[in-house]
Amino acid sequence: MHYRSTSYRIFSILNGVFLSLLALLCILPLIHVLAVSLSSSAAADANLVKLWPIGFTTEAYMVTLGNDRFISSFGISVLRTALGTVLSLLLSILVGYALSKETNEFKGRNGYAWFFVFTMLFSGGLIPTYIVVQKLGLINSIWALVLPGAMSVYNTILLMNFFRTSVPKALEEAAFIDGAGHFRTLWSIYLPISLPSLATISLFTMVGHWNAWFDGLIYITDTAKYPMSTLLQTIVVQRDLSSMSVSADEIQALSNRTVKTAQIFIATLPIILVYPFLQRFFVKGIVLGSVKE
Amino acid sequence: MRTRQRQGWKWKTTWPLHTMLLPGVAIVLIFCYLPMFGLVMAFQDFQPHLGFFRSDWIGLENFRLMFEYPDARQVIWNTFLIAFLKIIAHLIVPFVFALLLNEVRRMLLKRLIQTFVYLPHFLSWVILGGILLDMLSTDGGLVNQLVGWLGFPPIFFLGDGDWFRITVIASDVWKDFGFSTIIFLAALAGVNPEMYEAALIDGANRWRQTLSITIPAMIPIAVVVATLSLGNILNAGFDQIFNLYNPLVYEKGDIIDTYVYRVGLIGGDFGFGTAVGVFKSLVSLTLIIISYRLAYKLAGYRIF
Image 1 (cartoon, each protein chain N blue to C red):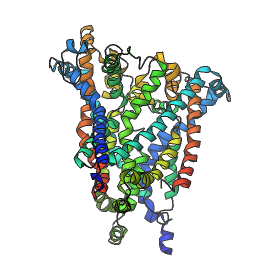
Image 2: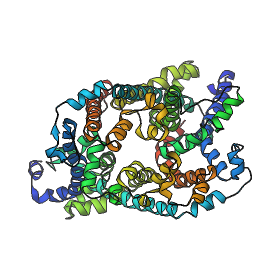
Image 3: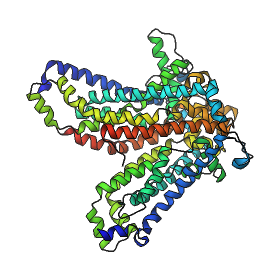
Image 4: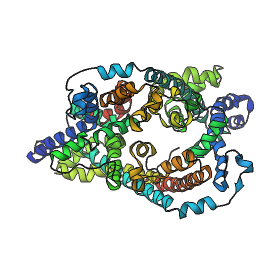
């Protein structure tokens, strides 16, 4: 009705154009990187490439994928992501379930809850944590990338709240009356109901593990055991190619701008691939709310 | 009810719950609480080969040094300034963006815009750092080509202190403004459409409706976001700065976290590094507690 007024129509069009440009601005850097990585090195080095490849070639990808170090770091990233996500999800489910009980059912509940929440407020910081990991003999072990952050208090609180609000109490009590214990109830009642939230949490955890680089930098000293994000950090950001264990010729090839952008794009690809699934989860609620006009 | 209350204590009914908590408790104990004992290093002239027990105790000497070193003072100021500007920007930009997005009536366009603006949030600062180093390069980076095309000399985005701060704040907003919008859009989704219809019947135009319905609907959540971000006043973004900075901009771009890493972990001055870290943790803890109290008072917000 009121949208028919001329001034609002003009605003509407300008607004749409402005927001579309802003949205494009968010992905332009990725398009630029992709364009450079698919261009000939001559064109890339002469800064001719904008948003479309010039002298199209996949050579940069061949060089990158032909490097053993890069491939093995990819494998390490996949492994840490898998291990880390499974472990983190398991811990959050168990702790989230126990903390979802009321204090009259489970007296220790509040004590445990504060024990976990306190770690969100205060931490020993970088250096003491590093010393603990080192004393445990985890340096250069994949567990140094998985264990320290395995217990996500934030995800646990999300799950706990979900368990409290979305699992019907009656269902749980029926299970108890039928003789099911806590483990059984968690497995057969709670988990099936919470699959969508578990999926969301897993996806976010996966992205977090895939992107994590700093723990690799401090806990892994043997560069052959770097996860991909850490390797990328040393070669693209620090411009230190010693971790690639390659000859002088190859260093020349690897420091090429097209190769660097190819590496960046390969590291981004898994995120882009899971992004549609991620987005479905967090946008759904919002879109559902806003369509009723 | 009485029987239930007594059950709360009974080992027979609660042992599975304690068992479920055990692995989580163990991990947190080892990797979160154990390091807290390491904080004694802040009060020691810590030497790794002597350990916690034989290193010399020097009281508050490390903390005194921290406030005396011009370096450290500058770093604390940089941290505060960058974090403060980021907090302000992250409040204003998503607020305005949510307002504008709310006016887009074509669902397809709205979805498309959302898809694009949320994406950068999920990319790491290693990837974005790599991209920015390439695009902001003075040696023909895409952005400087644009600057040159507009008739200006190339800008040292990452080599000049003041430009570095601007770049850090702008790129952080670029990465996260979309994602920060979600919470405001959720608030808007909760507005009853009948309110707009009623306003329309009363003769309010769209601008009037925005002032009287849309903005008031977003204010409570904006208050919560603002107060909760108080706890981040010393979090200037380690990942981002670490992947963008270089010695040229240490003076204006170095922050507490990067300083602790360089001086403490790399430089081997564990005691001093830890002291700076403790300072940050304590300030943050105090502010977080204050901000949660405030958020509860101002907007009735609670995490549990």
